[in-house]
Length: 486
Image 1: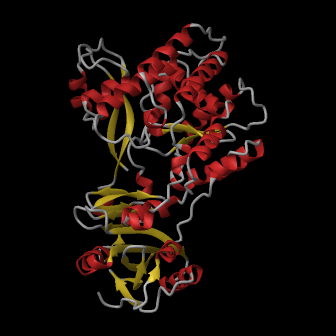
Image 2: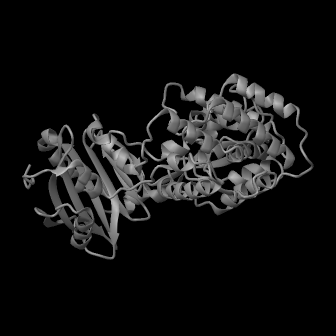
Image 3: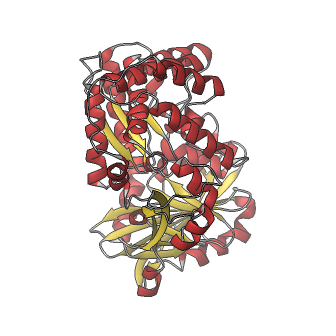
């Protein structure tokens, strides 16, 4: 390739160049066991959640979940904890709690619920983890058994995509708050959570029915990776489901009315909730990334694996040795000024062989450098390009031995960066949750066809907690996925 620096930059400088920082050592801080440490770690991780995963922008739904959570927290024993409840912008069905009282329920998990009792059950379960200080105990156990892996946010994710040479001993911060608890901790959280739900006026068997639904959903997933699902982070077993059912049978709910009322009112709270990726953050249509809010588009190399990491979108070659990332780098400035500021922060000569150019009429600066890892040398392509008021950085990385082939591929991809057309904007759709009224004698297959739902009949059965061979009496509200223009 042309314009390669003769003296490669060390791999650690690559990480500094990308300026992708993460959280530091929550386990070590928590292991001391103080309440102050719980609050401090919880606040730090909450900011990390907001920055990396994000919270859903559905205010009505967020208010509803907060009302349920606040009523449950009123029965909690740890008066020094300030509980806060949010809907996390996560497609996978999950829920988790941070030290200090931050509790999150994902959009994906809400989509599988069919009653307020189930919502109360899972939120109560997460409160229980905080009440029992399970994060502190887990941290102490982890430090006793293995060296601490420092959470490095996207840096670690990117490094592992590039090569194990750059990814050694780096773990994502998500490993902390999405790591599984012990089996006994899960059972204890089940019991405490069900107790809280019953004391607050909900039916405690709600947790059991949701676990059964999640088991069905997990079975449907089959060999596909669990990712950040609830059962990946809260392992379920038949005896755990049975134990929660037995415990619920011993509890008598306190007098109290559901916040949403009956099931139709509960389903109305979920109506219109996003199910898939949030189009506000941009969507992939094939290999193209389309962002309707920022008004940009870019086509990544064909047949590459596309996806998201914190604060960026990107793609990796089939062997995951070559990576491209797109992210905002600055605003209200010119590309060269943003690039120089980044060069100054990193302490690395990024612009020694930089050149000014235009990409689809947009001002840009492009530079090529080499970085040295422990076992290999990498070619790095940096392109700062301005669209509107924002300067974006496209980063391409490839092992030096592959750069002659993949460099031109990456450059052709960068040349597709530009403003979103109206035709492309029309391609951006959202998958949302809707409820439809079943007809008498209708099967799930017939309802799926009538609703033109992206969910198949099996998924509709799971999401609604009904048998696959159900025939509706008529008039029942059934949750389905619906694809609508954003």
